[in-house]
View 1 (tube, rainbow over the protein chains, first blue to last red):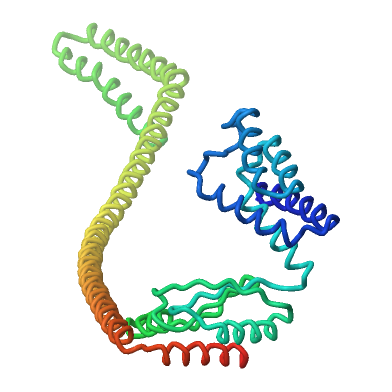
View 2: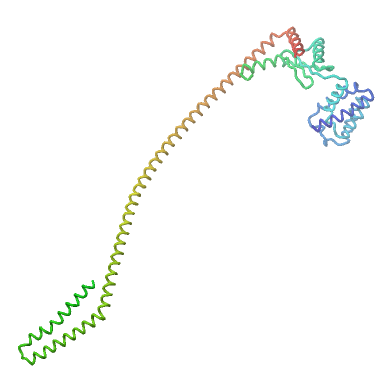
Amino acid sequence: MIGGSIARRYARALFELARETDEVEGTAPSLAVLAQAVEQQEPGTLAPGLLTREQRQSLAGALSKQVSPLLGRFLAIVAENDRLEHLPRIHEWFQRLQDEAADRVRVRVRSAARLSAEQIDAIRTRFQKVTGHGVLTETEVDPALIGGVTVEAEGKVYDGSVRTQLQRLERLMAGQG
Amino acid sequence: MRRDARAMALSSLLLLGSAPALAASGAGDHGNGHSAAAWLTLAFSFVNFFIFSFVMYRFAWPALRDFLVNRSRELQEAMSVAANAREEAERIRREYAVKEAALGETRRAMIEELRESAERDRERLLEEARLAGERLRADAERRAESELARARRELRAEAARLAAEIAERDIRSRLGDADQSRLVQEFVEGVSQS
C-alpha cells in the first residue's frame, strides 16, 4: 500500500511534467521499457538501502542515455531517492493517468489462438459500449484456454474460454457446482 | 397410729405393774411381816412405774411419736418416690420400646431405601451403558457413512476429472480455426447482450 502510494505520487509528477511539455505519448513507451528492465532483475536487487548513492546514480545515468531528457531527469530523482524498485508500479500508474486523460480503459484480451484484426476490433467496439469509454486492447495468446477468449476490463473478468466451461462442467459432474 | 401408741403404752404398764404382785404372791408363804412389806413394795413399784410411765408419756412419747410420724412420712415419701421412679422407669422403658420399634422401622426403611437406591443405580448404569452403546454405534455408522460419502465424492471427482481430460483432448483435436472464430464471435455477442 505504501509502495503503491509512493508510485502514484511519482507517476502523477511525471505525468504532469510530460503533459506540460506534450511528451506523454513519447514518455509512456520509454517508461515501459525501464519498468520491464527492473522487473527482469532478481527480486530485491534494487531494494532501498542495498545500493550506494553512487551505484544508483551510475545506473540511472546509464539508463538515461536511452530515454528522453525529461525521463532521464525523472530517473535521476528516483535513483537519488532510492526508489528504483518502484519503477514498474510507477509505469502502471502512469498508464492509468494516461488512460484517464484520454478517457479510455485498457482491456487485456487473452485468446486460445491468435486473433485477427477484425476480431480485435469487434472486441474493442463491444467493450467501448460496455465500459462507456475508449478501449485500448492488449492481446495475448494463451493455448491453455483451449478455445475462446477472456477479457479483463476495469477490474472485471469476462470469461468465454472453453477451459472455464470445461472446469464448470467438471465441477457439476463432481457435484460441487 | 396415735391409738396404737397408747395401746402399746398401756400394755407395757400392765406388764410392769403385774410383776411385783406376782413376786409378792410367791413370797406369801414366809409370813405376814413380809406380806406388808411386799404390798408396800408393790405400791411403791406401782407409783414408781406410774411416775415412770407419766414421764415417758409426757416427755418421751411426743418425741417417739414425732419420730414415728416422720418416719412414716419418710417411708411414704420414699414409697412415693419409688413409685414415681418406677413409673418413670416404666415410662422410659415404654419410650425405649417405642424407640426400638421406630429404630426397627427406620432400619427397615433404610434397608429399603438402600435397596431402591441400588436398583436405581443399576438401572441408571444399564441405561448409560445402553446409551453409550447406541452412541458408539451411531458414531460408527456416521463415520462409515462419512467415509462412504467421501469415497463417493472422490470417485465422482476423479470421474469428472477424467471426463474433463478426455473432453479437453477431444475438443483440442477437433477445434479448428472456424470454431475458434465462432467462439470469439459468440463471446462478443454474449458480452453485448449482458
